[in-house]
Amino acid sequence: MTKIQPTELPKDPSKLSGVGLKVGIVFSRFNNSVTSNLLKGAEKTLIELGVNKDDIEIVDVPGALEIPYAAQLLVKSGNFDALVTIGCVIRGETSHYEIVSGQAAEGITKVSLENRIPITFGVLTTENLDQAIARSGGDKGNLGSEAALAAIELAVLTKKLLPFN
Image 1 (spheres, helix red, strand yellow):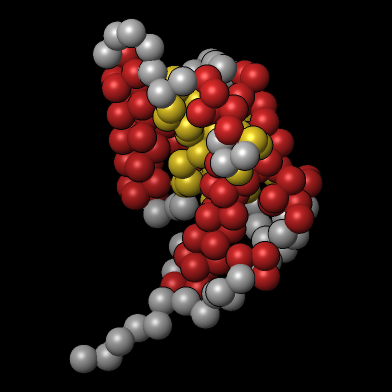
Image 2 (image 1 turned 30 degrees about the horizontal axis):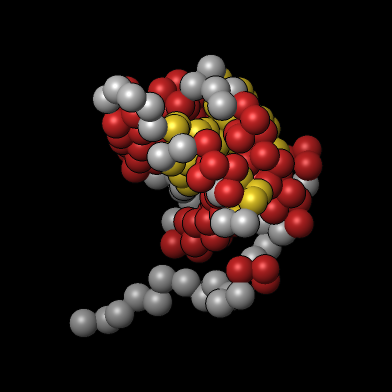
């Protein structure tokens, strides 16, 4: 049995190169005080890793449930190597949290797998606003930045393993 080496990606993520990649970002306006910081983190990371600002397209949607549909539209355009999704769902007093976070995650995953394009999950799902703030540029980092980094890594991997995708 031959073992396929899936990647020769650098172990240090800062050594990844996004040069030449086109990345779409689907950004949910709901909980904008949090999601705008996630968006800033994603954009900053993409640009720092070499993605040209003109090769980043941002589409905003009302909420997390609308993210999969917008992601599907971007995928169908054929213009992107990867997508980053940005959103924030904070638990409330009803089961709405489970429905929204679960359906958003399932929809994003489905679009990614059915279309063989990396779509990373930068949708915070937290118990409260303090946790969301901490994970959107606070003391717990920035999930938007992490999702952008993962998008570049997966786009490079996809180009390596499926060069004619």
